[in-house]
Picture: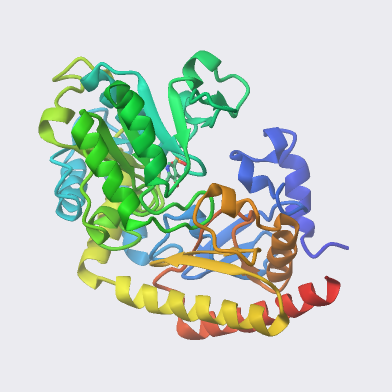
Length: 432
Ligand SMILES: *Cc1c(COP(=O)(O)O)cnc(C)c1O
């Protein structure tokens, strides 16, 4: 009998309500096989499933939980906010409180707008860029993810055409063609495109450190090229820091690499585990948004008090604790351990990491863009994932995702993880 009896039962039941039994596709474990675990609760670095089994968690709800699961301060803040009311559809002091913290970290966000997801932040930033420039083309990079709006579910067109093609049914070719997809870390390709069509580019949107093809660090030159070309052509540079904002340092990748975008999109950590996104930038640009300008954007629950309160609690802690160095040290310990284990077992891996984000790519060659990421052996990753899960370690259930270390992971949690990874690599090697 399965050790996940209750999860299996719940999955059968949830499949009667939800498509594939889930409310977001990657939760369905399709990339690694088996049925998803139903999680009952989390505390610090641990989660417990519906059968009461404990896991050391490196998923962190896909990025938001930099302070681990259910920190006291967040629970307290949310309870206090909800006692006052759950939503007013009117401005509140909570919004101002969170905005002050966001702007302290991202001074370039002179004006900002709260939304309820990263998808909305990116979608709205692009509409604003088009509204301001009167241009149509958006440049994105293969392997970067910016949420599920129509114009961003696009892959590179085939052959010599630069027109994008939809990656989802239901996205019109007429929409996708205005998104041009170029290879990540390839400044020369961007340069070539801008020489031809730079004056038609409304925006370039990029994950300044990629997390959604697995972790891929940017070449400094690449980000610099994007800044130079967009500035020179009157295009809007959008940094999608939905993962990296508050993950890499106070001020995100734009602070770390000292390159300032025109617009910044945030999500995940900024909501402290509740649904929040935000986009912002220069005042003159942002003031083109309704009610000041002609670009429409709105939201019934935008700036929701409970969500704002959670964000304030988490950002307040991050600012006062400044945990980034210690996070990086713990991540380095984990990365070093994984590399040593893999080498001992003779399993070829590339471990990419920036700050407290990491990905174990099942390949022996460097991963610097989507094409090289795709060389990974995804079946081997599935064995790795399932080997870990069976031994109480919860990694992302797909190869092309980031794992996260939180402030609550202690050194001995990491050492224990490395011991388990050691076992799993040996087992993978024996099976071939
Ligand atoms: C998660 C993510 C998004 C989308 O955010 P949602 O809150 O899931 O809509 C956008 N961009 C990046 C870089 C992300 O990682």
